[in-house]
Image 1 (cartoon, rainbow, N blue to C red):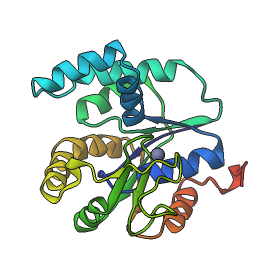
Image 2 (cartoon, rainbow, N blue to C red):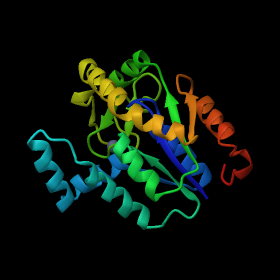
Image 3 (cartoon, protein in one colour):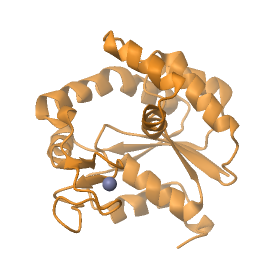
Image 4 (cartoon, helix red, strand yellow):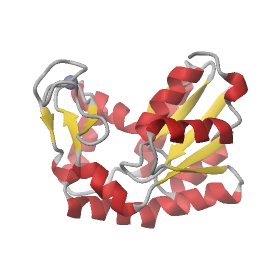
Length: 218
Ligand SMILES: [Zn+2]
């Protein structure tokens, strides 16, 4: 059983690395972003509540996200473990999490801010299915067309412009770094340099987590 949290600034590649890890080691990828998008797509009560909050300019309160994670982990569909992505986002959420769950490690993917900005402004998202591309490192096979669903709806998200990205990075420094520091005090944090090719980052992760011997899928 492997229970991990993956952290890093937006655009650090944690979604990609999570996907590889989950396939290879049969972990369940628990992504807060995916859960929220699913709720919005399916017009759930939760989505309605979140939309109301956001319309008034307020942040999603910690307890919403905490409940969401608690419910998701209570499904117990993670026989071999999980990779939690997008939570915790701040120190209070990290405290909440540590009180309730044992985890094996917190993977921290470290990428310089300037590279993050370069990466995110090259990012395109499929408006239909949510698949994510990067015009530099991971372009779609046919220009402008989503590999996954075939729709021609690849867009630059409005919040992927440079000033919005800088704001998100500052937000990360202010709120999420203290969460990482809390995990660091518990000696849970493994930091991997993320400014390299995907395979190399993945190899470091597996080495640092001592996972080579557990390899069950190729
Ligand atoms: Zn698509």
